[in-house]
Image 1 (spheres, rainbow, N blue to C red):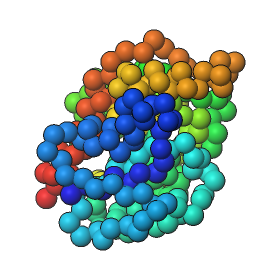
Image 2 (image 1 turned 30 degrees about the horizontal axis):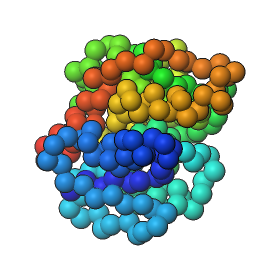
Image 3 (image 1 turned 90 degrees about the vertical axis):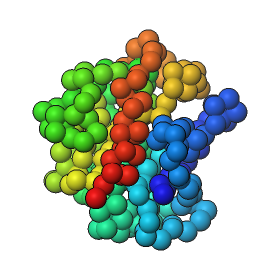
Image 4 (image 1 turned 180 degrees about the vertical axis):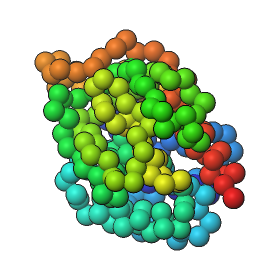
Length: 231
């Protein structure tokens, strides 16, 4: 069983057309994956027994606000990590994991990154279970204003680009964070660009023509396979 930590909600316009974070995440994990959705703002965390993996969704909240639900989530994630339960954080989830395990999250000094962006793997990714089969450069959808400015001391940097110095990392053998959105379709990222158009038009952003991102979209399925095959 997988646990989807639902850390927030998408724009209403986007949800009306395409569903919300949890639906996108479950779909990206692949067919036949059993998952429950837990909203830490509204309900208790489940027992750690029998959990195959945990995925932390994005959110429109800011990790640096350290709201109560974030602090409680951090404590539960530390407990899950101590049990070697695989964890995968997306965008806000990526930042929350970095902050939870000793890293630093801050506003990106150059403003938001949004659109379909090019991402480069590091040498460390060549031996990573989720990234080793990806091309050295691949496309992904991104939309964020905060970033991991300092990784936890025991984290490995797996991916970056000229704008965002931390697009993916791994801690130990079982914890991953990705700043990009492997659960986003081209329609969803277009909706995000449209919804934020008034706020981003005058900011220095990385914005490319939206296109398909098959390699990025496959990363969550790789995570699901890793969890289910884990000894």
